[in-house]
Each structure stands twice: as structure tokens, then as C-alpha cells.
Image (cartoon, rainbow, N blue to C red; front, side, top):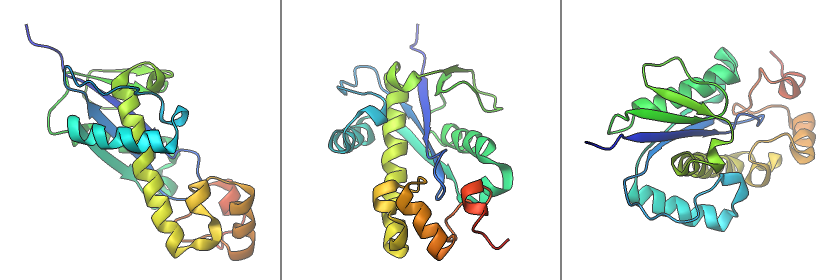
Length: 189
């Protein structure tokens, strides 16, 4: 009997005011031996970076996103589901089953299960959580070089006091989610 191929999916970036929502899908091979996989939010930045390297070397994975214009067009929930679908569909090996962190599943043809808190329970979801967060964080750090006023290298696009003060002073950038209320109040739509 063959082993079922299980993929884990998680996202990063639903709550920020700027940048994309990023989803990762990961298939852990049998006997992968990647230690200390956990919810990315529970890990230090150094530990996440170390685990990311190991995950990229030892797994089948795909990372996908929906940018801020798509988020503004279809809303953050639908953008999250779209990014998850893209991540799953882009895997080089089709999974038999997918475990998705959260309480909702995208409308897709995959056999899947939503698992609340799954990033702390299932190693494949933990691995996806780490990849999505690290990828998105790097994108926001790079964007901070172009838009240094917003402090994205520190806040990753979340609505911190620093970020809100910059929005008030400079207005939104092309990377801001103009459909989000804190940004919309400063937008000239």
C-alpha cells in the first residue's frame, strides 16, 4: 500500500495594511527529520530562517501570493483563498490530501481539511507557515528600501503607530491595500 501524499498550507499577511498575502504549500517527505517545526509566530527570527533553509532543501513546496491590487479587487478573504489555491496547484507533485490552517477551505477540487491552529499541530502546516512568513517578511523588508518612511522592515506592513503616523503624513503607497479602512481614510480614490 502506498503512503498518502499530504500537503500543508498556511498563509501570512492577512492583517497588514500593505503588501501581498502569501500562501505556501509544503509536502514533507517520509523521514524528513526536520526538527522543531512549529507555528512561525512562536519561533524566533533566527530559528525561522534556519528552518526555512532546511524546508527549502528537503521538501516539495510552492509559494504563491495575491498582491494588494488583487486584495482590493476581491477582498482579503478571497485573496487568501486564491493564494492558497495557487500554492496547491503549483506543487510539482499532486497531494492526495491537503491540511489547511484555519477554519475555511478554498473552493477547489482537492481533498482537504481545515484545521484551526493547524500550524502548531501538523508539521506540514508548520513548514508552510514558516515559508509563507519568511517570504512575505523579505518582500516587506525590500519594499522598505523604496518606502523607508513606513518602517516596514520593522512592522512588515501592519498598522503600528509608526506606520499609521507615516500614512497620515505621506499618504498611501502603491503597495497599500486601499480597501482597508485605515488606508482608505488617507486615500484619494
